[in-house]
Length: 325
Image (cartoon, rainbow, N blue to C red; front, side):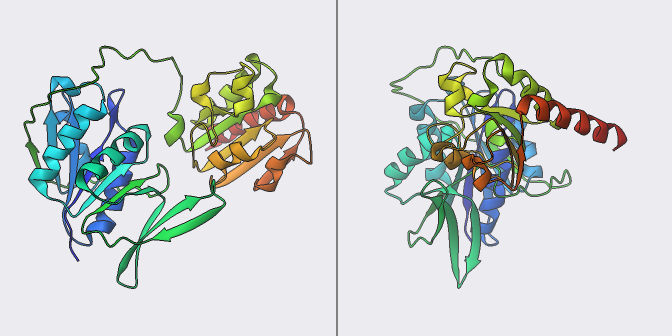
């Protein structure tokens, strides 16, 4: 059954988030030969439209308004509902990001629609579209189908591969004027804490530290390794609670859920709350002095040793590999 599916593209810090392209790939599967329409919402976002076409969107609808410069659920929901009313899609795909998790339930409620959140795979089986999502903190997975006329899902970043970028692709780009009104919240200014490096939620490589780093300075070797590998630095809640780093780096049940290609856990014991946020990483390497640490139970590779000795050695070896590659 061919469907029209719309996806919400996210722009942050002057660029499109990777999950925008992953949502298009998921939408292609859901569309089953139908049309995929990417939606850009914000102020001065027209410039990103062609990139969405290159990654597989058939069309792009742009909603620009000065009141949409900063995200608010009121403003973005008005913009999205206007697009939905105009396009009448049979499918909707958002990223399972902070924005997507906030906005999708509001849109689903307005549409009186079901919502399948945190999807990590979409496939066709037995004439149905089957959506896989983790449950019980990643210890199990459930497969869902929907009988709703409209399919609405959010996709977890770094799980559904984006389509190959193709600059030869073409598609129509149109603008939709929406009168944004009655905003209950107006964001005047966003003051961001300075976090260097790659976005943690979309990083392919993450070097994470726990209480074993012992201090704020203890994160420096981890940052150096992350820099060499082009990755991001994360942390357990224990490290954040101890004041070694900012809570924006926290990974776990009450922090960010990540699924990088490579996760290196340094001085992390492996509390169940932390495992809930990273256990679905493709390759897990654990470095810990305690051979009985729980983190080794989920690790693909384990190194029993002092992280302050092991991490610099790894850094030097990776530097050598980069020189010879």
